Image 1 (cartoon, helix red, strand yellow):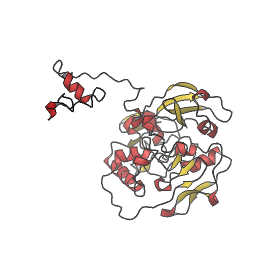
Image 2 (cartoon, rainbow, N blue to C red):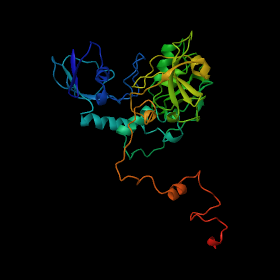
Image 3 (cartoon, rainbow, N blue to C red):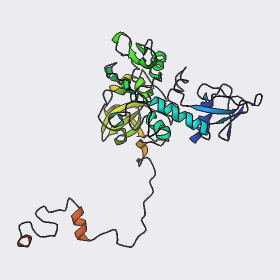
Image 4 (tube, rainbow, N blue to C red):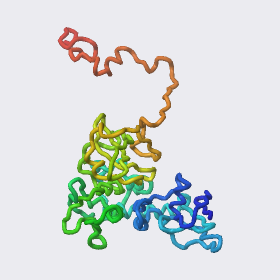
Length: 349
């Protein structure tokens, strides 16, 4: 069957959602998604970031849908027409959803380890507002260690429930979930139990914000100072295919490989994630390329950079030798003053 999104037609199979169809097209028509995760069953329909306007229901029933719908849980119909980026109504709704998500979210990006690869940062850059109308106090929770290598910052959590689904679908049992209701809802462990299963680190990878952080990497470095490399090793627990985040010859953290929508391609075990920080443990395939624009790949070594040519008068940028000496810290003689005379000379009075 055929569907049209922002004027672009595509043929999809039965059972395909609007969000999946938009991702097949790619580009700006793809709605943002904070809770949907293609690798996790039952995800989606919670954050409302992916709202779209169905202007034509189908060929059989061409009436438009009266309300905006969540594209991640709405199936396509033959002849359906959808407005995403092109709809002012959709843009206004996404602005409102973003404002709602930021009501309780602290502005601690300068100290958050997720900065630079945060989906909420990308969303607020696109749909955030300079002013906010929330005058009440934000929710405040103390940081909580929910495992020996995972710290939970509930203040940043948007309750997308991805981490709960990971524990449900990758492990035999989970010991954490959503406690309480309404504005008291929070992610926590049951009766202060610790999360110690072999795939618990994947909760960090699926978290779209900085609510779950890697304690072995906290405050070590900004992600844009690291160079990511694809690497693999023989592992009897998982696929062993990872991304190594290196600073010089030091592996500062190991994560699962992600696609352009920040979704994990294959989940990895804690052994690969935490216990192998030596370069000799890995077969490095090469530097990882990023298809999605982010702070990580700005001026990155994997991008082809054109030589900058400045058209100006010949020699105007070279400067005089005396000027170059003034601005070169290496060549400065600290026994000399700027005028070139020695500090203790008679010319200095």
